[in-house]
Image: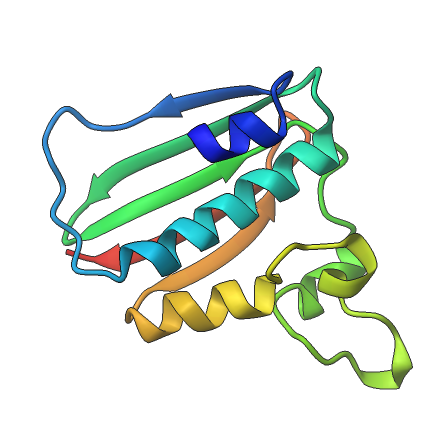
Length: 136
């Protein structure tokens, strides 16, 4: 989060982590890149005036990471291709058309390599929420 705050000093980032230490078997550098990508995307698509919520919690035998913004949300037509690097019919992928940093397709590959799952949705308050889980 420190690295993101250096790039976006005016951004509001709320972080919530459990009091208990979660030992997640992972490549810390790769997962850090996923988190940076998701948080930077949230800031870019919601602006500095809007908060970005970053949450880590334990659900069963998984660590759950969530990045929630209060921007415009994800367009319905983008959902089928959100985590894809190739989009049929010559349309740009969500990654390339929105400038997604390392790319959501790469984020998905990193999470899958860790036996995890990544998903996205729009939330009722307005904006998007990206969530990934990693086994403990």
